[in-house]
Image (cartoon, rainbow, N blue to C red; front, side, top):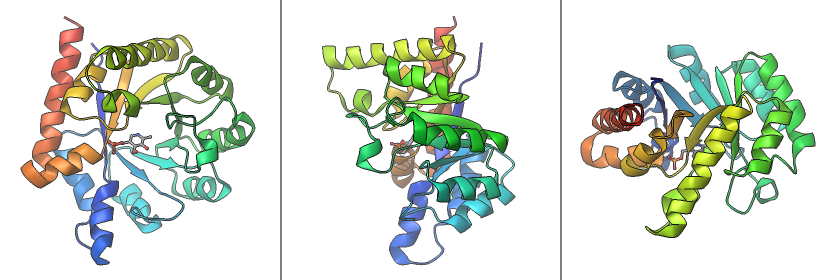
Length: 247
Ligand code: PXP
């Protein structure tokens, strides 16, 4: 049985810190706490407007953490140069401008192949595992394979927001099919956006999903139960869902 990896996104620790303009709470300390509680990796999104995570946060995490750092970034020359200097273990290309979006929110890799190709190539040359954040759409996965990405991260937002009923079941089926297609194309399959304990368990039950990246819900739960407890509970929930799948 393949253990599912849990990546914890600590962007909103920086959101909270920046609200007062000081140094507390420190995203690096939150990353350490998440790793101690059972996370496998830390994800941060360095946005072009630096609204939460800043360059210095990424540098500090890359230097201080033993675990893999997954840098979410736009496929711009500035971000590719930054990643080339920092050399995170993983880079996930995400859309930041409306023009790069499909209707549901992943990268339109099929339309943007010419822009993405040099970014994927340069990032892969640093030794990073490069993933593309995509809607569970067969055309997008085919584009990711043509681009030579090592992984795709399936956008789970539409599924997570869907009310119970046939529409939700259809979204989960789309994610399942996309995970199987990714595996058939030789792409490692990750998933994220909007996951909570229940939806993360449903994704963890898909055997091809190797990694979940979760931020907002865990930081929200940290208000009520503390970050270590929330991460430990998520770890337990997804491990249990994965083990039931393989029984
Ligand atoms: N994966 C990717 C590529 C993301 O951009 C984000 C943040 O939007 C997440 C996962 C985590 O999403 P959330 O904060 O909703 O858990």
